[in-house]
Image (tube, rainbow, N blue to C red; front, top):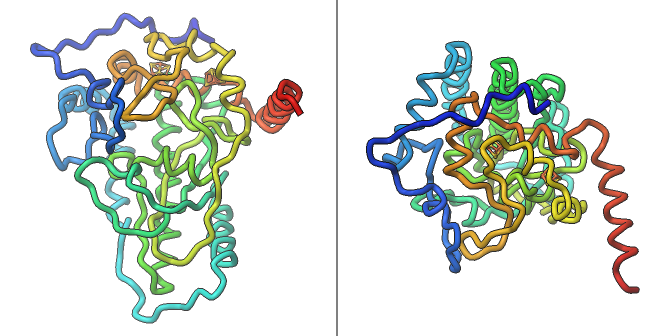
Length: 321
Ligand code: SF4
Ligand code: SF4
C-alpha cells in the first residue's frame, strides 16, 4: 500500500517561516489552556499558517473545491428559529435515546452525549450550551484505502457533508421542541475530538485521531450543542493505548515522519501528538492525506470488536488480581 503514496519530498516555502504550529498547539507547555487555531481557521482572525491554507484551497481539484464550498453554504442552516412553545422533557434518558435513534436512522455510526466543556472551544470562542451530542459517520473503507487520490478526497468531503446534514437535522428537531440547539459541522468552530472522547465515541490513538470499536478512525465527526435535558455518556476504554504502545503501523507509514512513538505534554496534558509542521506539508500537497487513519488496524471493517476484546483480556491477565 505504501508504494502508491507520493514521495514525502514536497516543500512549501515561506519567505519568512511562520511560528511553528507545534508552538501554537502548546507542545511542551506544562499548564492547561485552550487551543489556538492554527489551520482550517474560522476567519475570525488571520492565522499564522493561513497562506498555506490558501494554497491548499487553490491547488485542490475543482470538483473537491466545489464540494467544499457547497458544504459550507449548507452550513448556514446550522442554527435557526426556536419553536415558541417548549416541550417539557420529564425523562432525559428517553429523550437521549430518541435523539440517538434519529441520528442513527439518518446514518450515524456512533452517537454519544457529554457535558459541554471549555476545552472544546478555541481561545476567544464562546458557546453557552449545556451539552454536546457527538456524531461519527463512517467513510467507505475501500474508497478511503485509495488515499491520497481525488476519489478518496471526494469521499472525505462528502462524508463531512453528510454528517453535517445529520447534525443540522438533529439541531432543527431539538429547536422544534423549543430548546436551543446549534449544529457544528466544521472543525474550525469546535474541537470535536475532546467531546468525542468524553462522549464515549472512542479513545485518542497515536496518529492523533479518535479510534472507536466499530469503525476505527475511518469516520468524520460533527456535533450538536444544546440545552435540552439529556443523559450523559461516559468515556470508554477499548484498549487503544494497549495496542498503540507496541504498534508502529502509522509511525512507519506516515511519509512525513510526523507521528511520534512517545506521548507528549501538550497544554498541560500528556497525550499522543502529531507533529503539525511535518504533517501539514504533506497534507496540503496530497488532498488531505489521511494515510495514518487508513493503515491503522482498527479501521479495517469488522476488526475492532475482537481486537478490543483480545487487548482487554490480555491486560486483565497481566494485572495482579
Ligand atoms: S496504527 Fe497502530 S500505533 Fe497507529 S494509531 Fe493505529 S493502533 Fe495505534
Ligand atoms: S495525515 Fe499527517 S500524520 Fe497522517 S500519515 Fe499523513 S502526513 Fe502523516
